[in-house]
Length: 404
Image (cartoon, rainbow, N blue to C red; front, top):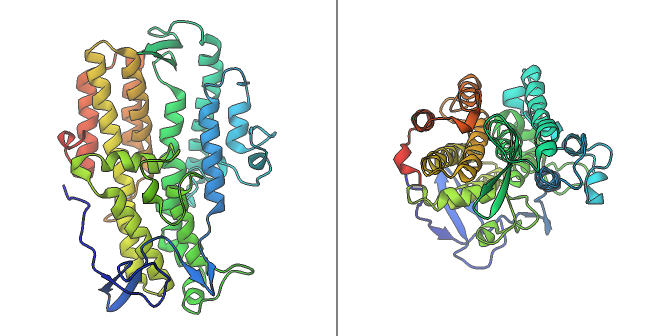
């Protein structure tokens, strides 16, 4: 397995403002040098060209919805689905209620995977809503009951209480981990970093001529790249220009949090820094009209973000197996719920070598069904968890033993 660390050679830049001569990298690729700033800072005529407000809004919506799953004092039959579609002023934050954006509109909505497959997109959206409805209809009404095989309710996990379905599934974890694929990764990898979006219409001609969007300081291509960036770094607690400075101190609960956790594994050291560097370099390449370098950096990002889902799915399946062996059901069910969500997200991954997910939706659905059949996590075997873990590892060209 490759390490994600690489040397950087720095030179002064004439195209971006930086704090020292060591801030920029010039690497000749495709015959053209690309000057890369130390931070994600890009300007035109003294004005920042970086903008991804829509991503900030949707991440804020997604976080509040995640919390609402177990806010039983405020949970109603339609609150979660209203938050999903941003209808009937469901959020506690007025700014979110007043937004024209929603989570649902961008779930399974990428150009590469779903523009010609609207029926699958609708089915995925409906599946998310089914988890929200089940949280109310199954878990909420049994929240004070002790969960058992075939019975929803609460189960102890050390000093914490988990709320699970009759199969032991935490719907809030299924939602959160699956959303990282269905919203954040699908939009990042299969939409905004897709050549079909970056080069759509006159985007390349306009970028070459630095024709900006009406009333904006950025070209359309620059903005599309920034929107991809926002799905990784768009939590309000993460600084726009230097997210890596806050990688250990932020409130993100989605992809930025989990790329940090993957990077903490010795076998995947450097993945977070390499991904940030690729975002910077790709954005600089757009500003400097080097599309070969742009696409190379997009492929790095696609590979690295896709890897998060495999590593964390294996991590949680193996952790759940160990907890079951120790008769720690609450801990096991929590880990398995996270694992099944990360596994679900693999269908939205992008293998740069094939242009397809690392595993097909049909295979992933069959494994999900295996895990949740009958009494689900109450009776799942360690052998089944090993089988699924190994299949995921094989699809990505890693080993189960590499995952901490």
